Amino acid sequence: MDSHKTTDSREANVLLELCMMGAMSEEVLDANSDDVLDAVQKHASHIALGPAVALSLRDCSIRLRFDTLAETEAEAYRRIAELIEIIEQHTDLKMTGTRSAVESGKLAELARC
Image (spheres, rainbow, N blue to C red):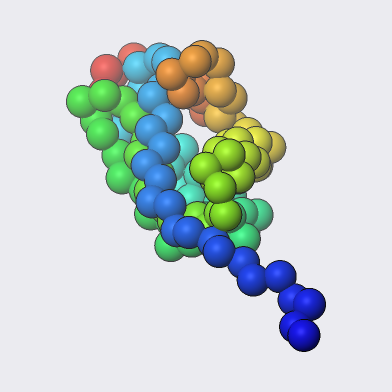
């Protein structure tokens, strides 16, 4: 009799939108997105499979898309929360609101996105 537990992991496609709280130039937003992708690739590769970022200048936001594996919906949300914590620890970004508003430690320029 096989005593190994069979895992029934499912793949979840996640889009995390990090909306900047203040105005910043395209260059600063791009630098923040590079930091996010770097942190995810170096410290969260066990969570975020195939991460990719895109910028929205209109919304002054970073969109992080990735897949994650989880057995339950609750586990998927825990993995996303862990990923957000990793981003906070390894970038200048700090989550400040309930809708993923982000405050950047990088110098925000006067130009509006």
